Each structure stands twice: as C-alpha cells, then as structure tokens.
Length: 536
Image (cartoon, rainbow, N blue to C red; front, side, top):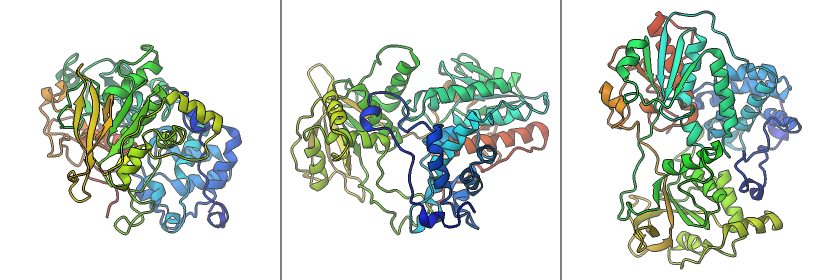
C-alpha cells in the first residue's frame, strides 16, 4: 500500500488545466503538460490515496485489466520506470486512454463509495509520458519472424493495438486505411485540444520501427479488393470502427448549414495538419446549435469556440442528471451524473462575460421553457473580456437539457436560420405541448452517435458479411466471421464504445488471430466479444 493514511489525509486534486481564455485561443491540450516535472509531486501524492484494496474493483471496471493499485504504489514511490512497465503490460496506448477515456475505473474505486476516488486517469497519463521520457517506450523487436502475415483494415485504436500485438508476436502485419493519414478516429475525429496529433505520430513511428507496415489512402473493396488481401495474407482483421452516423429526421434537415459532426470535426483537424488554411465548414461568426449530448457533441462545442462562433448552444434530449449517483446507479457502475467537460467549462466561462447572451433562453428552458431568446454577443469580445477579468463568476451552461428538436427553419437563400425545439417528456422523450421555442441557428451540427460500420461500404459489400440486429458485424466467440481467416475487432463488431474497449478488442482479437495462425498464443486476451461494461 502506497500511503496507509493517504486516503484520509490527502484530498483529491485533479491535474490543473490552463485557463479558459488561454485554451480557446489555441488548439493545444487543455491540461498543463503531463510530462512537466514540477507537477510530478502532485501525481505522486494523489497516487498515495490508493488503498490497494484486497479486491480492486477498478480492475474489473477497466476492460484492459489495468494493474491500477500496482502502478499507483510505484508512482507514489517515484519509481516511474517500474510504474511504466506495469502500465504497459496491459495497455498499448496509455497516453491516449489517459486523455480520452471517461475513467469508469474511477467510478469503481472503493473510495468512490462515500468519498472522492483516486485520480487514476491523471496518474495513468503522467506515467505514460514519463515512460517516453525515460526511454521505456523503445520499439520492441519480435522474437523472430513467424512466416505468417496479417492484413488489418482500419487504423483506429482497435486496429493499431491489434497490429502492435501481432507484430510483436513475429507476424508480418500491414494496416490499410482509407483516409490519407493513419489514425482513424484518433486522427480526424478527436480535436487537437483533447489529443495533440504529435502524440499519435509518435506512437505510429514506434509501430513502424517495430515492423508494422502502413498503407494510407486505400479503400479496401474499391482501390484494393478484399479477395486480393485474403490471397496475399494469411489472416484479415476488419477494424473499421462504427462510422454509420445516426440521423436527425426532422423537417429542414436538407438545408445548407446542417452537417453531421464527422463532416465538421475532420475539417478542423485537417487545418491543423496544414491541408488548408480555413475549413469548408466553420463556426466563425455564426450562431451554432449542436444536437446531441455525448463526447462528440462536446468536441464540436470546443471546436466552435476556437473557431470564433458568435454563440453556441447544445441540445441534450435527456434530463439534466444529478450531481451524485442515484440508487438506480449504485457503486461500482459508471453513473450518468452532471459533468462539465473542458469544452463546457470554456463555454460557461465565456457565457459569464457575454452580458447575458442567450443565457435567458437556456435558463428559461430549465425553468419552464417560456423565456424569450436574447441576442448573443461577439465571441471574440467575450474571450477578450474573460482574459481581462479572470474566471471568477461562471455563466450559464451551454446545454439545454430535455430538449427535443422539432424542425429546422430556413432563410430565403436555402440556409438554416433557426431551430424549433420543445421540452422532451422524461418518460418517452416526446415533445410536450405548449413548450415550443425558437433559437437562432446558422450552423447545426448533428452529434447523435453511431450504430456500427457503414452497411454500404465496398468492403462489406464484397465480403457479404452478416450483420447483427444492432447493425454491427457478426462474429463468434473467437472474433471470427463466417469466412475462414477473417476476424472483426473494435467498434465494427461491438458498436460505439470507449477507447479502452477498442484497445482491449484489438488485443483480444490479436490473441485469437495468433491462435488461428500458430495453434496457440502467449498474447493476452483481456475480453471476449460478448463482454460488456458493468451495469445494474
């Protein structure tokens, strides 16, 4: 146990974030630099809060089976290299999960029963950066070539994890990606302020040095047939993710200025990659409405703020959750509680300097859906005011909860101009009569999640793979499809999930492929295809 009294004497303290005014002025990571040596004492003190429980529920909450009490103890003792070795034993990409995962492990921390959990996510990210600084992330050479080869279609976290595991097992691995750069969702779907692309490039360089081959800009099924891949390689892994977007089926959907989130976010990322100076879809100077309540919606919010939106409102059809878990969501499940992401913090801080802005509409929606909509003020002026005045009083939340979108209204030129909404009844989410409001909307972003791989993709069409009722690719307990030597890993088979599940899928699928190729495996298989997060 790190510090026998740490959980009693040390209060929880999360990793510090840069000021909102500074954050919205650039696209850099919102947190202070994880590798900053002056912050390591904070990490060590927080690691000392771990109780090294006899039954560490945090293990079961993480599909990777991360050895959390082990590396907490080592981080507390400043033995960073040993901590990194324990962390990397179960997780290929802790620098990604330490930034992007919502940390169900913290919800399952025993301290969370009646206190504040250990800052597991922050500690993980700090150890990950220390691992690179101390040289623990050197490319690993395989024991020897196996003489077998594997093609992986898709370069998101599942595909990359699967590739690294199989390469390190001695197989020749080639990854095919339809986008022009490797990384999948990590490359173009996650904004730079949540994951700087230099971190992704650093990891891909490591995979290349280990021997993994990458082929970007190749659409399998169109540019290269799946039949050719199957003939060229001994096994094929499909890790194309869940990219089939849920739609907003309301009148006015076809108006100009209404876009899917994954049409909007990649363009902003491509600007950062240097592909062009300005994105084809921009929030600059516009009233923006985001429909959806998840992480992608929050990413759209942070992106719109940085692009200089005139005002941003996010609509969540769900009721506003409480501050604490309810009896219906008992420990150790990951509860749905009211949370502020970094993007919501930024919007809230800016709203406090907008002289009211559209706060009246949001407050009215919460209090009875009868307040008039005020005009928003210029975002740039708000940022300047925030920088001058500091971040004392918080403004209103950018979100309207229990909000059902009714229709979109256009202007004479065919562009979207307004969004009609109403209060959604908690029981069935149907609009309540008499609660309709209209808010200005010059850019509408749809962030309603994903349901599986694109059913009309050339790859799926050529292979004629079976789909589950949920729209994912059917597979057996060995991650295998009905086609010999063809496997499925990640969200393509599981459906939309967390990054830790994607990496766990990649690791487990690699073990299944290794067994298929050699008859046995020493690779870990942390999950099965039917495993699911802990729920009531």
